[in-house]
Image (cartoon, rainbow, N blue to C red; front, top):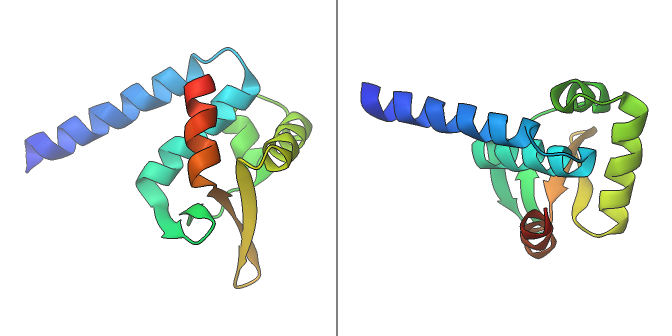
Length: 108
């Protein structure tokens, strides 16, 4: 049990480091959303719902960018049909569209 938990934690840390090493903000944002989808995601009719409250400011801090830049990039990802916003009980959640997200990750 301990070995499984340790291995899982090391994989998470490795994923975080790989995400931080990506050269472009859009790639880092997709990377962090992908990590969160793996940890907190659940299937949704639109894709993979990241069922955790995450503000643009928190996301900006995680990827090392300004909030305004993150807001702009999230808008671009929505326009590219990679990401959508789902409202649950009055709170917005990010939802990665399955087919578009896979294509975007491979492109990054």
